[in-house]
Image (cartoon, rainbow, N blue to C red):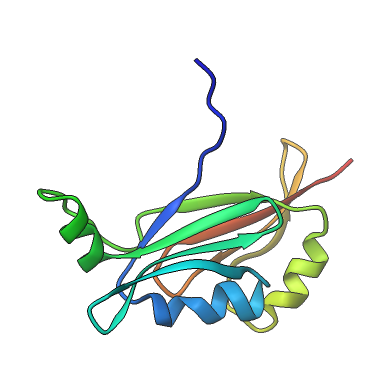
Length: 126
């Protein structure tokens, strides 16, 4: 058995509230979207070979009967080649951790997205 890719799906209350964080600040592109009623229910966002999906609580409930989705239960670890560029792109976005160097050789910045997910950006150092 060979795993070829894992793509996180972040459960959010409203995709429209989260898009500016991912697209305007971080430069992800919207490559697919699925409406759910009069709003977005699902989107795929990409940056190069990196992909993240956003899906609303309401859409998950309709897609997966018996599920109990809730926003803000995910943490992402995103390895980057230029943490300073990510920090500039984040601008004045509040940080949980502004910057730290870890014992495992990474320099990290941690933020929380509009849906309550913790997003950790890390660059290898040393």
